[in-house]
Amino acid sequence: MPKAFTPKVITANALLEGDAVWLTDDDRWSRDIAEAELLTDEAHAELRLLEASARQSEIAGAYLADAQEGEAGPEPVHFREAFRTRGPSNYPHGKQTRA
Image (cartoon, rainbow, N blue to C red; front, side):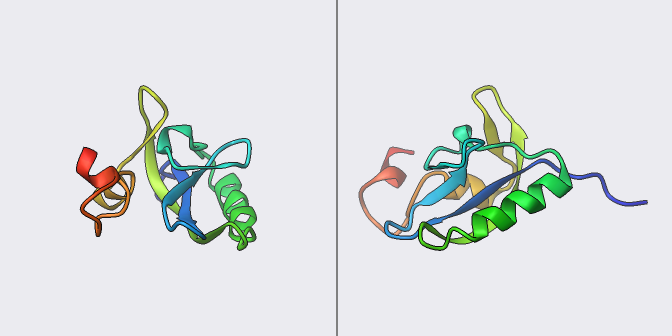
């Protein structure tokens, strides 16, 4: 029996800044995962990923990441994605110092 589809968000890195970004339902790239479109249908998720991957002038490395519905919007399920929401970790300033 096939495994049930886990809800997903589309994430990538902003091409110029390198920040983690998430695709919203109105086709914007947001630096806030809570604004991301939560995809609950596998076929729709694959289609949205194809569309996002074609936007190579804006982002690099788009992929589907497991997510769950939270109080304020989608939330990451895995550590890697939770870590990415806090921004670059190789600087002694910025988002990581505020976590």
